[in-house]
Length: 317
Image 1 (cartoon, rainbow, N blue to C red):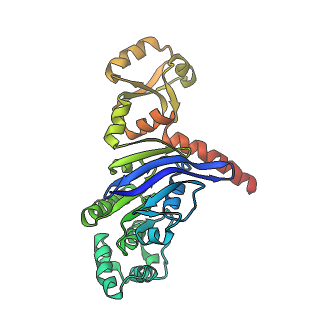
Image 2: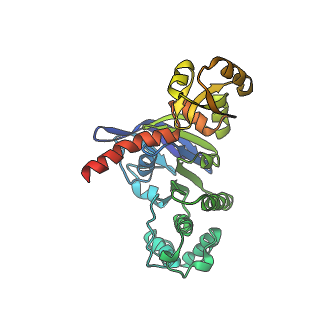
Image 3: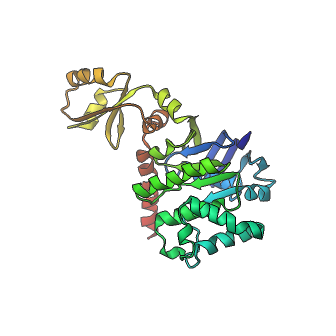
């Protein structure tokens, strides 16, 4: 059975195409990740699947319901954790969850046991009477996950679930998500631009400029690259890049993909006239996969996408 079915999905904002003819399916019980830089179309796709935005073309079904014609049915069967917190800081954790239960029409007798179950799952049962404004960023994120689970959804959407959190808190959030998959019969659909987080997913869809450029398991995607990644810094990277036709310039230096990095290094030192300042060799990663399919790293993509926004903000100011 499929939890999410998408075919030919397209969404534009004026002349900007945010989602450009996307097709994919998500199996029931799967942890499915959307990987890509900010502005790639990940959040727009989630908004369409959660009935918060309408597609210009294409079809999408979530939990068996059409997102365009059966919006109420879709909303009853999904949970959603936004990038930015939507909790009421002046209410307690318990009050936030009770308000959510009222909105979803949960039977009154089931609210208390379900609330205890989800709060214990995220380690916040002892803090149920505390106002949310006293919570740390990680505690708020955990409470939002608990709130998204209150009405027992069939699909839980997590839009950048750990953005803005420190590495230790990010790891703890993923521990709670792993526990959630063990205890709940649920499909998890998440967006992220953190490579290490994408490793937790059963399958990954790589988004770039509104298009789906690759979709497979993390292991299969890395195997598809099939090369070691050699990264060098030189005294003149521009000149060195011209002498290496297969090299790619990135923010980290000059990157060359080769089948055997160890045997490639002696040839590199022998043929390159520009002094080499540093060298690193490593096996393929998801960042290498993104580089192979798009021609740049996620960090380079975000820097390129962020510059026009920065200039625009300065002009408005």
